[in-house]
Amino acid sequence: MSDKPIYQKKPEWLKVKIENPKNLSHVNTLIQSLNLNTVCHGANCPNRLECFSKRTATFMILGNVCSRHCRFCNIDSGHLNPPDIGEPYRVAQAVKELDLKHAVVTSVTRDDLSDGGASLFAATIKAIREASPETVIEVLIPDFRGDYEALKKVMDAKPHIINHNVETVKRLYRDIRPEADYKQSLELLKRIKEYNPKIFSKSGFMLGLGEMESEIYALIDDLKEVDVDILTIGQYLPPSERHAPLIAYIHPDQFTEYGKYAQKIGINSVASSPLVRSSYNAHEVFTPSP
Image 1 (cartoon, rainbow, N blue to C red):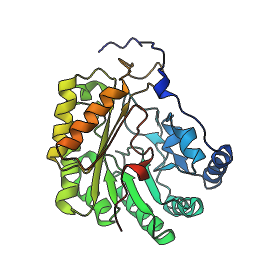
Image 2 (tube, rainbow, N blue to C red):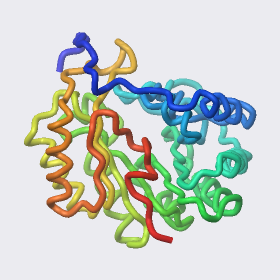
Image 3 (cartoon, rainbow, N blue to C red):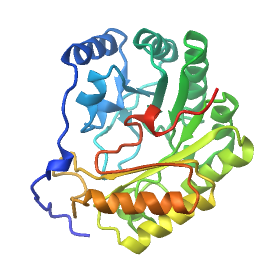
């Protein structure tokens, strides 16, 4: 893959709108007052204005600096601060204040911590459940370097959904996710269903990085093989010229075809379109029964 950026005009189907400026301001103010991070800002998500206008956000715990250097991601790398033990309580406050029916909590990757931050995930799940018992809790977790005991801490906290994104096809891992491992990510997803079938497993990946159709179908097959319940497929958009270059905008019709294939082979809930992101409209993609 060339490192030279490929400049292409953004197609009409990738344009987003703000639905309620008042709600946008309210969410921004609340997040700032509670000293919280969101992946919406940190990852420069293209949907953040729409989500904020709907009074929703994906909370990012364990700081805003990552220990890894994935080439698609806009999160900073650098000095890593100790975990903030008060963060789970503040996230729970925000969930309650926003009256969220579906809360998503993710994190930067923290390979410097002995459990990768799993204990703070567990504490956040507990705090949200106590503050807002009716809220569906989804966590988007890193791979914890394959540490089963760390994953077990999260599973024992019993969130409704555990999400771990594979991000791209196997061939592109070395270039796009140099510090991650394709098989390790699949093994994590497999372990969720083996440990507690009542927890819904979820994963997602991006298109437009130079993957081939055969590789995409093979990836969907692999996710079905580990019993993933929920799948999201979206368009890669480079955050800057420093990131992995965009190879192609994928037409919505092609996203539809991949989504139909995933459903055909038995993945229960699929969202596949250019603006789909892992936590974008998560409550609409899938909400488990009480």
